[in-house]
Length: 197
Image (cartoon, rainbow, N blue to C red):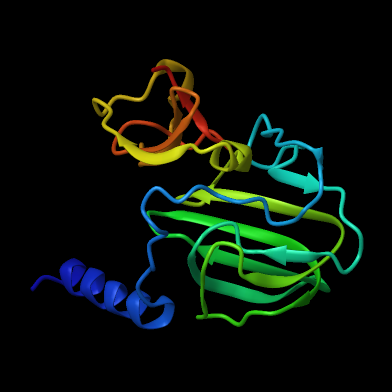
């Protein structure tokens, strides 16, 4: 084996050992809201990677309101960042959800959860975010029943998404109701790319 091949094999083995295999969500499972409260600030994608916006849904919760898993998966993060508690769940196929900030957490990293399982207690300003292959997408699409699908692209990025950097696979919103992964050709433009249906 060449050096790059050995590196890739070692990296893949390390990733599997540290992160473990992703538990896929139940096929066709629709996301459920994490709390029984109204959305007070909807998803607003930023115009660029570090721009202002809202990368999730903010709910009008009271302190201590129960927070549930939106779908089945494996807890990949349950911890504190900058003094605030968060829980991230890997739902398989590159799809993750994160809830927080939380007053308290009820799950540990590595736990398997089902849709509706309690994961913590809310604090005011609690958000739900959704990421597909590390790119934030609108969680409301998943709450409304959107499905994750793969969209094959011809390998050339649309002119509006071209950059001087390398082209790499990135998530896309397909036909407005499906979250998809562009297998080649679509760049991460700081938010979900819109691919005309």
